[in-house]
Image 1 (tube, rainbow, N blue to C red):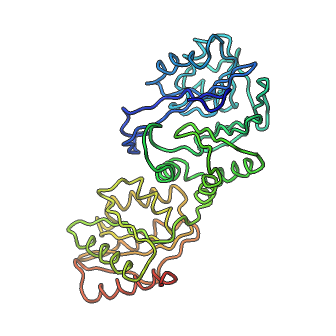
Image 2 (image 1 turned 135 degrees about the horizontal axis):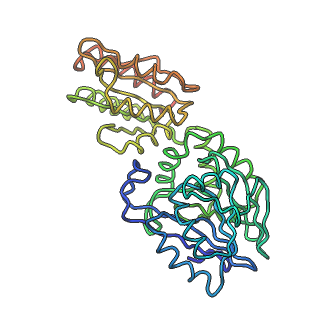
Length: 388
């Protein structure tokens, strides 16, 4: 893929993978991106996953022609981007490797060597001239590993963004960018909103025409849309007005309550209502929706004096990723000693700026007149401000 006359894409598509990082379902595979800038000096940006290193090295000469690379720039040491480092350095013995000090520490850990005789340790705002093209390195610690840096190329206004602005899916998959980028961001980077905000602040002073991430497509058009989404996600703002109902159910009674609430909310003209069975739907997509919408309803059964396992896992995912700034409501079911609402509130106690709905729904085994009235009251409260 040709990004410009001087900049080429040399990454690979992985359609064999089913779980990314051992947990995220990727029905349309993954892309491991790598790039090369051809100038007086040649710089290669990052390598690829170990299963594709041989393919990547085989294809690299197509981009290089008869020339040899001068630099390997390592922006991120996660193995899906760094696994080919030693093979590259063996294949090109005159190349110099560039990375942060922490990156070289990790190289020693991963490969047993840190290329002390062929390396250049770079710091925030360091520069490197390739000829017409000039690189500025920007430190981006914890976006989403501590060694990460991104690179700005001044001649063509390109930001090589490491894992930022990445998404799930191979490059030949036709799918909505925002959906899979949101799931990727919330799942993998979401905990580090403050650090992403710091990177966005650095990037705001740059004129950017193209973003080259390590996963997903190269971004050229409507860059403001992508930047605005990252601003929303990293500041934990509400992206979509609406209500997300996440439930678990053993014998169907809690499911009935969750579905009935969704019907009542729609009847009251709530702008968007999304419903998910945590035991059956993709957990990462459910977590994504909790961060997307402004209001979240958690409905579950009391289980072993706590809550049902899938709800516990779901709330753990939320708290691990700094869930905040939302309205949360509770539906609990318990046949003899209900504790679900209390347990869920306790689990969310560390979250910032949560507003708990005044109305709660307490089901004892099955819905009755009292709990149906509580559903009505909760629906009315949640739809305040949405009525047309």
